[in-house]
Amino acid sequence: MGIIKFFWQIIKPYKWWYLLMMQAPFVSAIYAFSSNYAIKMIVDVFTANNNLSFAEVGFPVFLYIGSVLVLETSWRVSQYSWMRSQPNIRAEIFSQVYCYIQGQSWTYFQNTASGSIVSKIKGIVDGYNNLWAGVHHKISENLLCCIACIVAFAFVRVEIFWFMILWSLCFLIVFYFTSKKIQSLSTKTANSKHFILGKIADNITNIFNIILFSSQKRELGDLTKSCYNDMAKNDSSQIKWEIIQNIAGTILYCLMLFSLFIFMIDLRIKNIVTTSDFVFVMTLAWYFIEKLWTFFINLAEFVRNLGDFKSSFSLLQVPQNNLDKSDAVELNILK
View 1 (cartoon, rainbow, N blue to C red):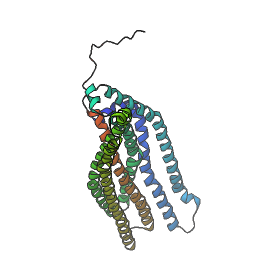
View 2 (cartoon, one colour; view 1 turned 60 degrees about the vertical axis):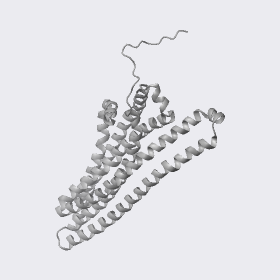
View 3 (spheres, rainbow, N blue to C red; view 1 turned 180 degrees about the horizontal axis):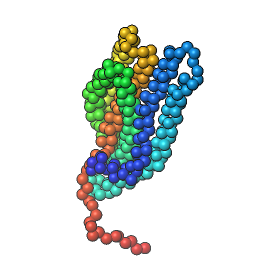
C-alpha cells in the first residue's frame, strides 16, 4: 500500500477542514508583505514632511493593525479546523493500521517480533503527527513567507530580487546534498530502534522462558551489542551530518546578510533607492533570512521524520496473505 493512497482514504472526508487549516500559512505570507510595507509608508511620511498629522499616517497604521488582526483570526480558524479533524484522523489511522495487520498470516507473526509491530504502529501515528505539523505550520508557512518577501523585493528593484534568489539557491544546494544523507541515516536508525524495541518486548513477554532456559547475561549482551553497533553508530553519523548542515547554513546566513548590507548601502549612495526603500528592504530581508533559515531547519527535521516514518510504514507494505474468504460464516459461540 502506498503512503499517499493510505492517507488520502483517511483524509478525504475531512478535506475541507484541511483546506481551512492551510489558509493560515497563506495569510502569514501576505502579512509578511503588508506589515513591512506599512512601515515603509510610515517612513515615507516621516521623511517627506516636517509637520506630521495623524491623518497622514492613519492608513499605514490601519494597514499594519489590520494585518495583525487578519493574521490572528486566520490562525484561530486553523486551530478550530485542527480540533475538528485531527483527533478523528489519528483514531482512524490506528483503526486502519490494525485492520491491515489482522490480514497477515500466522507465519508473519511467527517471524516478526510483536514488539516491533507495536513500535511501527506507534511510529506511523507519530510520523503522521510530525509530518503534518511540519507541513502545516513549519514548512509551508516559512516557504510562503519567503516567496512573498522575494516578490516584494522585485517591486523595489529587480537586482535585489535576483540577489536574494541567488543566495536562496545556495542554501538549497547545500541542504539538498546533506539532507539525502541525513534521511538515509534516519531510516537506518529508525529500523534499528524498531528491532531493539521488538526484541525487548519479546524478551519481557517470554521472561520466564529466559529465566528458566537461557542466560540473562547473554540476552543482555546481544541487546547491548545491537544498541551500540547498529543504532548508536547510525545515530552518531546522522548527528554528524546535521552538524555539517548547520555549520554550512550558518556561514551562508552570515555571508548573505553582510553582502546584502553592502549591496543596499551602495544602491543608497548612488540614489538608486530611497531611504524608505532601504528600510523596507533591510527589514524585510531580516525577516526573509530568518524565515529562510527556519524553513531549512524545519525541512531538515521533516526529512528526518520522513525517514522514521518510512521505516514504520513498511509495516503496511508487506502483502496480506490471510484475508477472509468471501463466503466465510460467522463463528457462533453458544454458552
